[in-house]
Image 1 (cartoon, protein in one colour):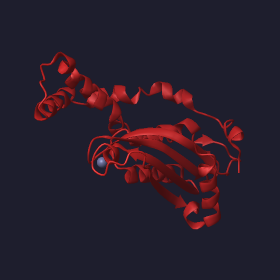
Image 2 (spheres, rainbow, N blue to C red; image 1 turned 30 degrees about the horizontal axis):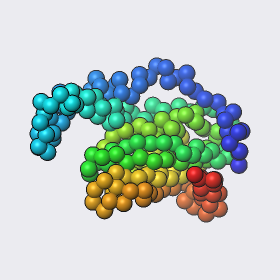
Image 3 (tube, rainbow, N blue to C red; image 1 turned 45 degrees about the horizontal axis):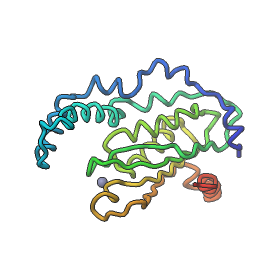
Length: 218
Ligand SMILES: [Zn+2]
């Protein structure tokens, strides 16, 4: 087991990021902003708003750009983040905790947001830069989603892409569709997990990861 301060010395490969335009730039090129704006105008009309009112005149085009940004993950393949950094001697557990994510519930198109925690045990030193774990989580979150699928997608990409010995992903989110409407329970958290490989078969390893993920959670 490596302590966090030791983990920070693992090599990062962020130089590669400079060649990738930010997600939203790629997305805006592929998104039909006019169509979204038209839809937003219809929603405003539908709820009985006066769409000529100065305050919301620009709202449809503003919202269109916002959707391109918050759903930008749809147009980016997170596999690109799986760039193996050779670290031949490192076969210990690696955990990145408290990755803040914002996603959009695909049933209601309102946000759900919270934290993702990713643990994995590399095989033959195949690791990825730590920031890539956060980017992968962010990428799968930026699209119409459900939390269960988001959790599984992160785990599977790492497990298959890195051929890791084990992967465990825990996601805890608050869903605005449970807070603002329906059951109206603000503050409640939904926790999902996906475990692959050794975390599935070895209870001690799984417990070790869980205790590190849960430690001093604020
Ligand atoms: Zn929902």
